[in-house]
Amino acid sequence: MIISISGMRGILLNKRHIPIMSMPIESMLLAVNSNFLVSSFLLQDMKNCPT
Image 1 (spheres, rainbow, N blue to C red):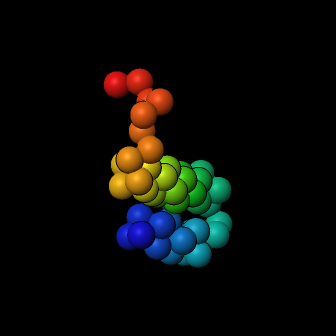
Image 2 (image 1 turned 135 degrees about the vertical axis):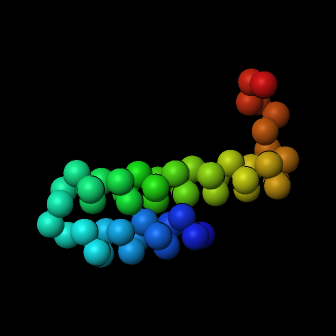
């Protein structure tokens, strides 16, 4: 949650610099990916994942 909020703040604050604006977008994608990973561990849905 904190990563996605800081990503949204970064997009709103850096409207002029396109390369710098891509970094908060990457952090928002990282937040979504980690949310999927944590929810799959909580739901014990990792049986087909190679370890």
